[in-house]
Length: 122
Image (cartoon, rainbow, N blue to C red; front, top):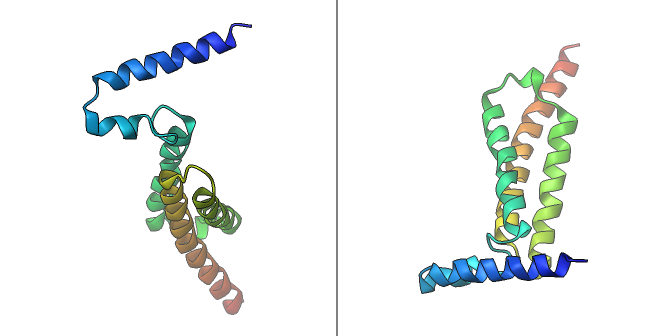
């Protein structure tokens, strides 16, 4: 199989790019959770969930899903903890999950209070 050759070619390309970077940026670029790995890009794209949650803050409370907000809240809490246990520590993953948990908690509490108020009125 030629798979190992592709990996070494990728590593060579990354090192070539790193050689053109200023000395102080090389450790960030070559970090095990840096921009040359999925450990960087996965959390970076997950910020879209946080942006969506922030956009939902002004959304009518009747349209907020309790189950969706609860699952995002719990997922954010679990993965925030996990990101600090793994090696290397992934602070990008921690921050996106902490913000996902925080914004989802706000939406969940807002929807839950509305749901409880609706039950009281009936």
